Image 1 (cartoon, one colour):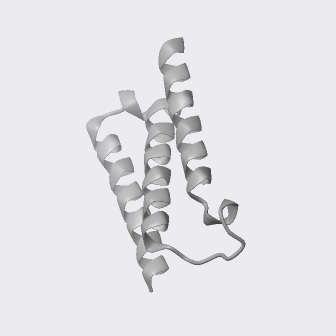
Image 2: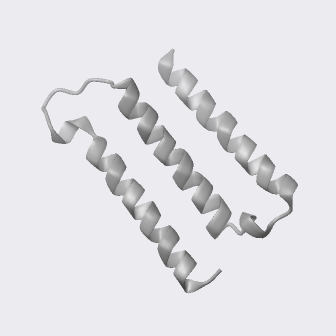
Length: 88
């Protein structure tokens, strides 16, 4: 992985982290209420961050196709389960 790729990936991860923080309702009001759209967006951001970390920093981008599919499937099941639990 080149230095440019590492830097770009890191900047995307930082931008997603700042974006997730910016969505937090606590910074706008004193009352906290659960928001399904905000939670869904933050979970989507987290899924993207997880995939970037697994692919770029854990070297899965150069792994066999079955491993790429397995990690993507694992992330889909994990985040699908988390969101389903949240909605219950």
